Amino acid sequence: MKLGKLETRELIDDSAMNESYKTLRTNLLYTSDLKVISLTSTVANEGKTTTAYYLAKSYAELGKKVLLMDCDLRKGSLKKFFTVKTRVSGISEYVSGQSKDFIYQTDVDGLFVVLSGKKPPNPTELLSILLLKNVRSSKRRI
Image (tube, rainbow, N blue to C red; front, side, top):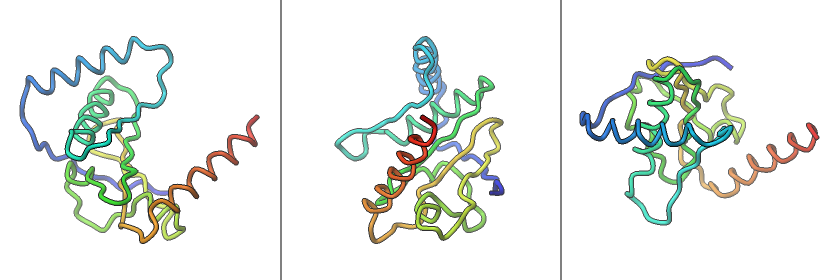
């Protein structure tokens, strides 16, 4: 799997907002052995993607390796934070077997991104396949 490279695009230039994300990051650093952060809500337009992006970026700026994934296969919106100059594949193309290249490096050291990809006709089914693959591989490790 080769890594493509995406340029970040600052949509909001607000130092107070950036400071808030750094405060959130610092508070999360005090949790023990945190490996995965998942953001979700039941309502659209609450800022999940914006929070995920700026939080991931702030972790990368600390020298951490971060993989930011957009798993909203119906209406992925992480792509708006990047300047995409060529066609890119996402998680939907990977899970459906259409591409093996779906992880992209960014111009922020340590920040890697998986975009949602093309909207599939069966997003729930694709996520189920991905979950089953993970369950099977974790059982092999036990």
